[in-house]
Length: 99
Image (cartoon, rainbow, N blue to C red; front, side, top):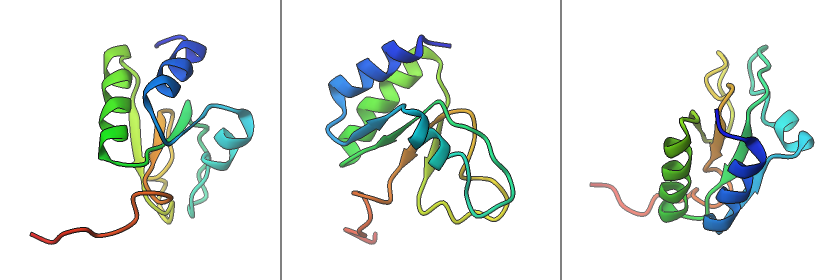
């Protein structure tokens, strides 16, 4: 797995949203509505699809798993894991089109 400090730095260079690798944020994202607790590698809160794509390119290049998350309301632990959590609930929370 990639060096975490380098991964965080590289993500911060390309993501206009938020990149959080601090202990407090990792603790917040280690739980959902289930009884499970798994600390993530870090958290990316993309502002838009372009942010998410750039962050996915970086994690993919380094072989780091990602975990998409909406509201964190899973009752069976699907919103947690040892990965970079992509939280779409803060900025990407509107339906723009239904096709």
